[in-house]
Image (cartoon, rainbow, N blue to C red; front, side, top):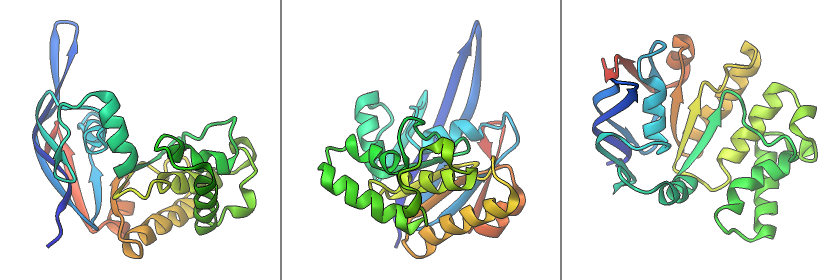
Length: 225
């Protein structure tokens, strides 16, 4: 039986705004299993982004527990969390978040640098990943010399650099036209179906969620509905 890659157990996240406490998440419990393709949906202000931050271990809960690969990460220091996150979670963002001074290959190598992987191995793996996403011929180009779709392909290769268990894609087609967006999601779907990666897609697009995800989680007012 598949085991949870990530589990949120009665998670609350409260932000202090002056004298007011705002509960972005209110007792959320969620399990995402190995090999799943899950879409997380919700209107603006629903707690969708906060949920993404919890699933990606980018933040810690005010109350409750988060288990990543059965390890309780709820109250770890940022440096410890960053090290675990770097190995187990790959991120794909709407804004691509590529380093403008680096070429495509260097951007893909970046996550490996933080995991003390030998440079020769970084170089070989980066080229293999760029070939996989159809960008090997563009590896010497900087982000400003690439189209949006090409930049997102580079971002996918970078997300795979440390062979993570889970890929967290936050509105990955938000800055792309529909044709390119479908190409990117088809590539992400292949990572799930062929390579067995666990995919969490955060989107407001119901059509995309229904087309690509195997399970849809709806969030409203910091809770799953």
